[in-house]
Length: 116
Image (tube, rainbow, N blue to C red; front, side, top):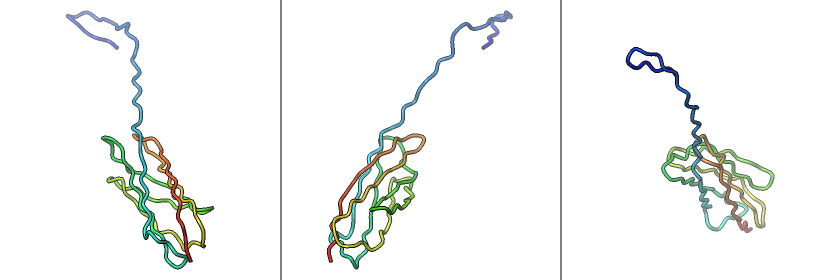
């Protein structure tokens, strides 16, 4: 860096400073409706991503068994997906927010009891 002061050319000997900005930590909330999921009723998974001082937009992945669904998370941190019909039994639903330039990724696992 060169500075001109009072007509003289002065060079700076200071080293450049590297600043690291850490990402904010994201938290995922998951709500499944209806409360009683049956083999004939499809479940809807609502996702809420929260973080302090940062808009939590981006993409989340919802995984049920071997199937995965991409969900767009809007600027308010909300997104939802309607799941296909599920067979009877307890299903594990994994929601993973992929993060963005300002937020870390986050994961939440919920279990759904599917009845006949």
